[in-house]
Image (cartoon, rainbow, N blue to C red; front, side):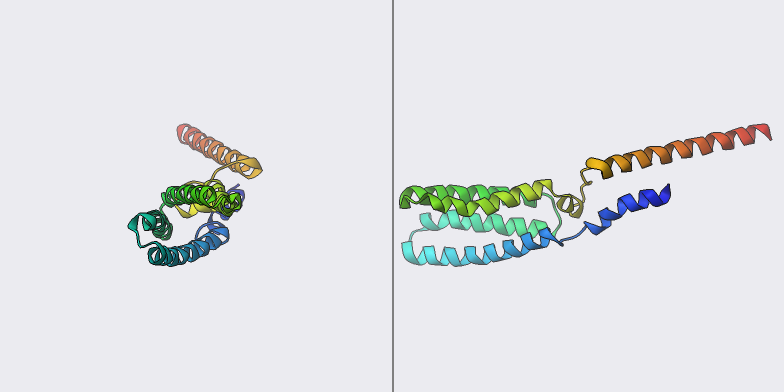
Length: 167
C-alpha cells in the first residue's frame, strides 16, 4: 500500500521546479523584457513624448514583476502576467485602430495561450507551493489509496486495543 502511495506521489517531485514548459515560459519572458527595453528606447527616440512611452514602461514593469515573482516561486506571478497581456492587448487594439490593420491582434494569441497554461498547469502550481489539482484516474487512485491507508491504520489501532484489553 505504501509503495502505491509513493508511486502516485512521485510525479509531484518530477513536476517541481522551473523546467519543461515553465522553463520555456521563463526564457520567453526574458526575451520579452529585453524587447521591451528596446521598444521603450525606440518609442522615446521617435516620439519624444512621455505619454507614448508610458504604456510600454507599464508593460515592461509588469513583465519584470512577473519574472521576479516567478524566480521567487510566488503564484502571484500569474496575475502580473495576465495584467501585462491585458495591457499588451489594449496596445494592440489601439495599434489596429490607428494603422487599420487587425492582424496586429494575432500577436497576442501566444500571450493568451500562456495565460491558459499558467492557470491549468500542475507544474506551475507545484513549483509555487500549491497542491496539484487531483483529477482523473491518478487523483482518484491517490484518494482511494489514502482512504485505504487510513482504514488500515484504524484497523491496526483497534486490534492493538483489543490485544491490550485481553492481556
